[in-house]
Image 1 (tube, rainbow, N blue to C red):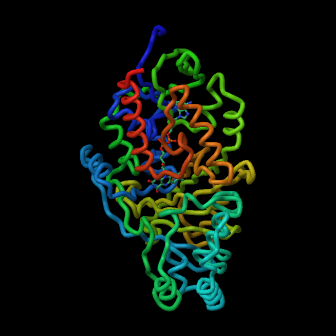
Image 2: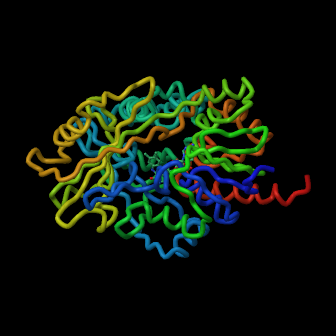
Image 3: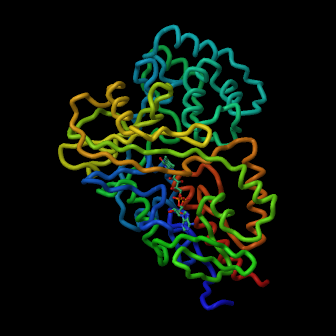
Length: 432
Ligand SMILES: Cc1cc2nc3c(=O)[nH]c(=O)nc-3n(C[C@H](O)[C@H](O)[C@H](O)COP(=O)(O)OP(=O)(O)OC[C@H]3O[C@@H](n4cnc5c(N)ncnc54)[C@H](O)[C@@H]3O)c2cc1C
């Protein structure tokens, strides 16, 4: 044992790392100068901007109890989400709300939906769409949107992650939505929660941090000696551990570990994620419209989604102001032209009617999420298995959205962190 040793050490103070510390009270080492990771909010000129849209879609007692415990008030919202396509704002999800779209398009979507091959054994996400929503909806909305969002074509993705992430409307809802109803609310976030108060989604982070152990900020793990069970930080100090709980992105973790077997290195190199640039615009106009968020499948608009923070909470914009958060997706296979991005976003916001040309912009801010959504391609499952098997052998417990390399919402990342903490405690208590 070296000079400094902790039975359990946690890397990353996002909601997963913080949650892992609740039951263990183990120290959390965070590279950034603040907690919260992707679920944190940025505070700029009186505006609170989440890092891409964040809403709480859990009614789990463990989650709500934790928020109540920390006295974080929540407001319940009925989703007002739209899709901007063919020059029309259509309520989300598209497949149950096509009544406002051009007749020819509506007829095609409906025909293809009714004639879809329900016996198809899908081999990829594109075929999964054909089976469940038909070619019309797929080709008009979900394929272009997915390609814009994920930066890879759905035919190169699996569909194991879809579950409650892609709405499954009934045939009657689809039919009704094409004929007259413009408001069929389906999907897991048809009703959602959002913290009250000036912090934006930080309210959720604060609730998780409320019962966590000590957090050391500005401490980037730079080296993990897997043989000696020691982790080294950017300021040069190092620490021994029995179990290392890591919520840092899997490729980065493997990159700083010693004695990594070649097959694990190769597996880490196969993991892919998209990145998102969040472009935040503060405007001197209190009412920018009724929406919570809008999706943009068409390629001539640079963002895939915008959200309206003032419609989530009264406290996230200065008086008389509102804001829009635009999300632009990119990756190695589809790089982001950064020059003039904020101006391009503003121009597109004006073009789609979200801003007026004479709106007074009072704040702009960008935040880059390098690892945003882990891509479920054909390599992911096996690559993750190989990496996890090895980490287990060297007493590293990966957790969280990027540690487990999956599509977790914030409450799921938090619950995964708690499970990781429980396992680490169990490992300490079990006789060797
Ligand atoms: C654009 C977007 C929108 C989303 N919308 C929603 C939503 O509406 N609802 C919802 O519930 N969830 C949403 N999510 C998911 C949610 O944000 C995540 O599930 C959750 O925040 C992940 O937390 P985490 O702790 O696993 O990871 P992270 O938040 O990434 O935490 C990891 C931490 O590790 C730190 N770190 C990295 N490297 C090191 C190092 N070497 N040493 C020390 N520390 C390090 C990082 O700084 C970070 O703080 C969204 C995610 C994105 C990207």
